[in-house]
Picture 1: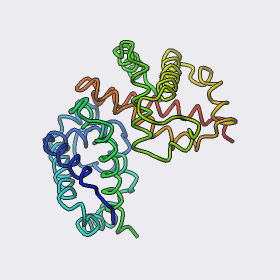
Picture 2: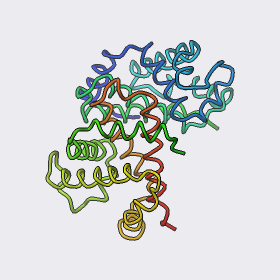
Picture 3: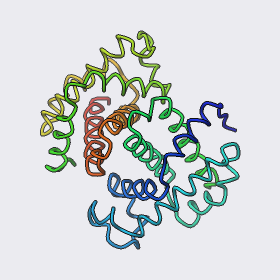
Picture 4: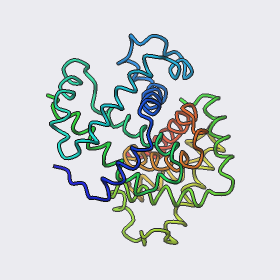
Length: 147
Length: 143
C-alpha cells in the first residue's frame, strides 16, 4: 500500500481544490489526442478529430474528459484504497477497452503540465513531486487487474 | 517528425524565455531530481541541494545545448553530434528515451508554469516532439 504523508495529502487536496474538473478534464483528454495522435485509435467513433481545433471543440472529447477527471477525483478521495477503488475500471480498460497502460502514464504527465499552466509558480516542485507520485499510483491501480 | 509549424512554434516559445535560460534549466533539473530520484544517481559528484551552484551551472549548460539544437533543427544529428558521443560513450545515461522523458516532462512543466495559457496544445505538442527528437539523436550511438 502506498504511503501518503500529511504534507502530500495537503498538496494533493489544495491543488485539486483549484481545479475545474470539467475544464481540466476536457483539456487533458484533448491534449492527449493532440500530442500523442495515436491515442485517437481509442476514440474512432468520437467524430471529428482532424485537427487540434476540431479536437478541442469536440463535445464528446469534452464530455469524456470530464468523466475521466471526475473519476480521478474518486482516486483522490480514496488515496488509501486505490486498487479496490479502481478494480472495476481496471478490468474495463483491459477486457473491453483494450488500452495499453502506457497511455495512463501519458495522460498523467499531460495532466501535470496542464496543472502547471493553470497554477503557474504555485505549482511548486513539491507539488509536482507529489502529483507525479499520484498519477503514477493511479496508473498503477488502473493497470492492476490486467491479465 | 517536426513540421515547419512545429519549428516555428518552438523558436517563438524559446524567444519568450527572455534571458531566464539559466533559471529555467536549474529549475527543470531540480524538479527532475525531486520528482524522479533515480535521476540523481548520475550526479553523485554534485551538490544536489536546492539552488546549488552545480545545479545552476549544469542547468545553464543543458539549456544552452537545447538552444543550440533549436537553432539547428534541420540538422539535429550534426548539431548534437558531440553530445551524442558524450552520452553514448562517456556518460552512458540509461537510454535517453527513459531519462530524457523525465527531463522533458520537467522542462515542460517549468515552461508551462511560466507561459500559462501560452503553453497551448500546439506548443506542447511541438516541444514534446522536439525533446523526443533530441532524445533519439542522443541515443543514436548507444549501440
